[in-house]
Amino acid sequence: MRTVAALRHVAFEGVGSFTPILAAHGLALRYVDAGVDPLSHDDPSLLIVLGGPIGVYEAEAYPFLRDEIALLRRRIAVGAPTLGICLGAQLIATALGADVSTTGRKEIGFSPIELTKAGASGPLRHLANVPVLHWHGDRFAIPPGADHLAATPICDNQAFAMGTNLLGLQFHPEIVSAEIERWLIGHACELAGAGIDPVKIRADAARYGPALESAAQAMLGEWLTSLS
Image (tube, rainbow, N blue to C red; front, side, top):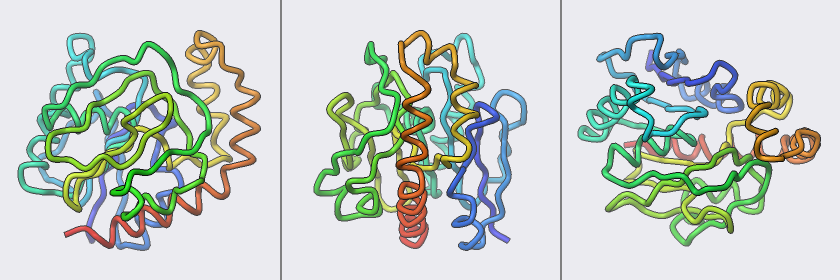
């Protein structure tokens, strides 16, 4: 059976609503916990690199980031299917030679993305006018040769793709509304520091979550079907 490895940086940030779609495409899911589990050289059919509360530029403090970037460079070199979400997308951008830096402000909460022409003609079209979850304070530059897919007023670069097998998303389409409390507890200090009310995020998760879950599953399904 084909496999998908999800590289996880914090325990409560998993593949969420993507789980049934991965199974429907015949992909057996396993988690690899960053900094704890060894990065296998037996490359999975698909690698999903998930989010986390650290920056790609913090490799001195978190040296496992170097190993992740090296792994991504190996997969990119052979065109192996790879999806990055939030920190995962920033790691892919770094592996491709693009800059990642802090924006100086937090973008946390639900709001829609603005699709570019390229974004609207691909799998991200399913997310048009659907508020997605944002949770970041860093920004990646669009890597050389990649297509710019989406933006928000706060962050101009929200998604990129290189060919059919490489996709980076700054936002979180995978969130399951019923699991939002794990995020609010796990990131409580960050929310307090940024002056963001968890009550609003909780309410927005209930309001927008079902539509996002459906749209995100359609997006992932189309992307998986397009893999070469």
